[in-house]
Amino acid sequence: MPLFQPFLSPLKPYPMRPFPLVRVRGLLQAERQFAVALPEAERLFGLNRRFAGVVPAAVARACRIAALQGDIAVIFCANGAAASRVRAQAKGVASALSCSDAPVGSIKVKILADWSVPAPAEKHDIPAAGINAFKALETSLPDGDLKMALERLLNRRR
Image (cartoon, rainbow, N blue to C red; front, side, top):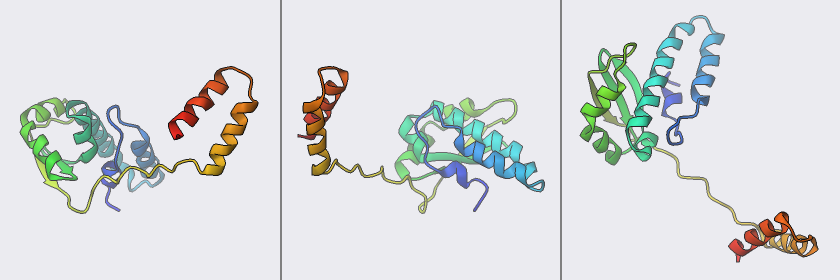
């Protein structure tokens, strides 16, 4: 698995969750020979965090900064729409990404055809036996917050 693969996993909109870097940090610190890559991983994580704050949330979920080659940030996008949006905002994105530890003068956008954001998980409805159990529970409960919550749940399922 390439080093930048954890950064290509789909993330929620800004603020980004820290778990990909935490997992990478643990893996890199476990092996001395890989520990030299930790500063680069942290730098890329910071760039991705700033990137998510500059572009719209949907674009941030579809794109990841995978490398910094000199002063050029290489951004992988899952689709052409996200890539077009990043290219349209290239100067603004580059200036927003630039900082003292990672100077960014320009960006290079690449579309990865084999990488895409997975479809949201399918929601499974409550089976009929479960609905009947909730109805029985609702009738046996005294008036209060729990009974009101069950009523709202059952009303949404009707």
